[in-house]
Image 1 (cartoon, rainbow, N blue to C red):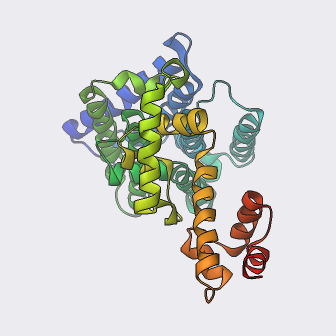
Image 2: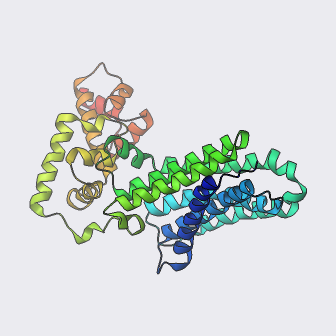
Image 3: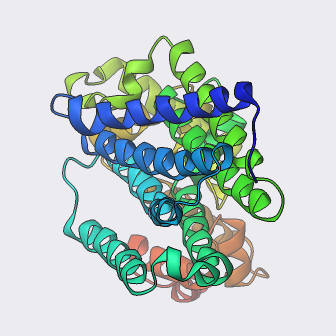
Length: 348
């Protein structure tokens, strides 16, 4: 379908142009770019190619079918670029792992092989009827995988929006923008391509607005957080935080929540999750997981002594464990014996 509204064309084309400029900056112009920024540049480049193709072919009566192949090929790699962009940021990767390169290379080889074997101009029906669904399926899988990686950040943003960092909020917004664009492409396939073009421009402008509205926006494309070793917690503050943390464990029994996350516990303490991680590792000498599991085991020990009629499995769930096997493994690691043997020894 061809559109002739110049205002809509300008709005959509400007979104593509801005996205292309962003990709050029992060891929070619930024001095000593971080890995996450290069991947963000790749993501925006692929998006601008995919949507740019749609804009051109929708507003120009073009029969240049090879352009459609380029757009769909770019679409095939959008999902994996989003996924590794998210992981590179969350994991603070400085260099791209070989496994990521192999993964990228495999998908690139697939789209290249299909493009050379069944070029779009001569196999339009194959691309539009069959292969396009494989492309969208692949994109969708990586969006889901990105959402899984961002589950803690999304949970934090929903429950404690004021405590969510700008950088993590940005990642969630980029992923949600991809989800919206993916959905709009499915709608456009069955109904109207105009939906996907407008959605893309709205997403781009919304991200730009969010970026410009944040006073700490530089943190989005820089390393974060600042390594907390440079800002060690004083002995007095560490003691205060430890006492507060123990009170939370004793009075509110937060460890009984099987889905308890570091971010949630830090919010209860009213400190950042990076500071809580530092407190646990440097001042208490335990990881978050070991600290919580220790309290769960201590609670289980008390129940094993006091609740003779409770089954071991019931005690496990009451203490915050999600499985009987996990309870047995952790209990033996902490106490040196199994829950059943502990109960026998206590009752003899």
